[in-house]
Length: 496
Image 1 (spheres, rainbow, N blue to C red):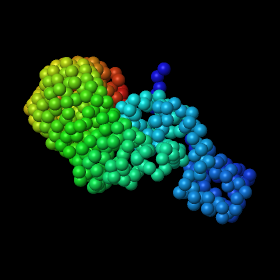
Image 2 (image 1 turned 135 degrees about the horizontal axis):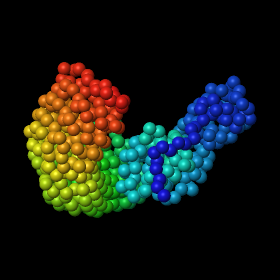
Image 3 (image 1 turned 120 degrees about the vertical axis):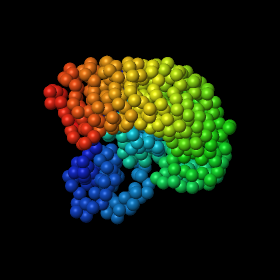
Image 4 (image 1 turned 90 degrees about the horizontal axis):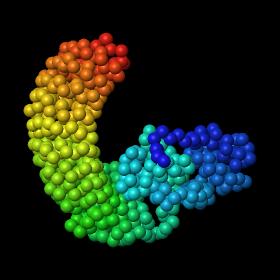
């Protein structure tokens, strides 16, 4: 059985009028609050935010109490959630499988209102089977998905926080998760971390200097998840947990990871905008490696191929000049991003044998003279601004290509006729190819073509064979003088 999160529809919370009516029935046994209680009733209803269970618990608790007791209760509620509400809500949590409980607590503490796809990637690195777990949480109305964003009700999130805090109210270092800046700073500055801590996520809105102890992570032997953004350390870390499965530390201060770090179980590593200059010898468990904008990194280790599980490699904006020949051993690599690698002068020929490669981005690689002629397995290619490429004859070998992006290739003067013989091609972007004067007559052979953008070229007219494109959907055609041209003989919808 397969489980999908996309397209799930859940019952919506009560609107304001419905919520006020339900609250009144529980608090007053009437359809509407008495005038004396109306304003404070509205405060309670707003607090419950449409959650029927919370409305019922609050209304029942306030029944037959004085207005002064109501006001005191609301002031207390703002600081300490009503225990009965959390106890009732926890019934749903207690019925979950252990992995589903972990997912719930991760969302409550770290990922509420985060993009669903990204959270799934992280939870997958933690071996929590997120697609199944999220389906269960949605079915139990513990989370919702809106526009690909995970959303948890405020009271449910407070329940999650409370479950973590129950383990130890005062001793932060004995909790499984740390998510508040003041708590994280206290533990890491005092070096009071313990093996109880499994996850730390700190995403500051702006850069901030900290005085964390260099050995702050040395005792966190069970730390699996570590995400640090916008933290400027005055002392670089001397230790990292060998139990880390997902590490995301943007602007990491050191030129390398600690020498004692053994990433044998590391699955995801993101070190964007960091000072990293060299990597370790590799790990077979790594699936996602993102070192984008690490401008001091000028080479990848020759034994990169040992990371045989690697599926995504992002080196965009680094100073690398070439790829190691061992990259051919990455039999699972599907995405390779080399965007804006301005020192990259060549691609290793062994890359041609990577049958799993679907997405290759060479945008902005200004020193790359030409593309290899037999990258036949690539599905997506972006080749912006590559210099010296005056024709595209080598493209004939991209038999599995779905999307071809040659945007702003200023030296491109003609297209190889083989381009339009590629049956799988769906999207062709020629925007900004200012020296390109015409499209070849065999355009109609590209029977799978859905979209063609020829804006900013000097093409004056379309070949008549375009009428053969039965499923063609959109064509943008703007010459260098700013005129728009459309072939009016097409039956498919067009847009400019």
